[in-house]
Image (cartoon, rainbow, N blue to C red; front, side, top):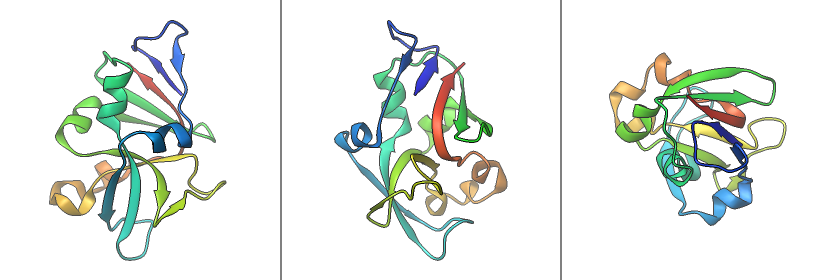
Length: 132
């Protein structure tokens, strides 16, 4: 679900993993602190989703199933190919572990991304994004 400063008659727009899979898929092959070796993540560019909902803010508040929240500057979505992943190594994200979505940065393509600041923004079990 995406809420906040967006264009919506109902105040929120809902996306399922199937909705995301119907968009143009992007694959990122990268290492991460949570996986062993290189992992292939498939998802949708976060900037494309924000364009689709006509997001107007400067910060995203991303929330996980358990209420854990991180802030992501919208500028990250313009500077890097950040995706909302729904598959990992060809399989749907495991329910109760990473699903329904996981925000992934292309950590291996830019050394700047291989640091805690960006790892900390890579929230899994993502259920809600609020645009502020």
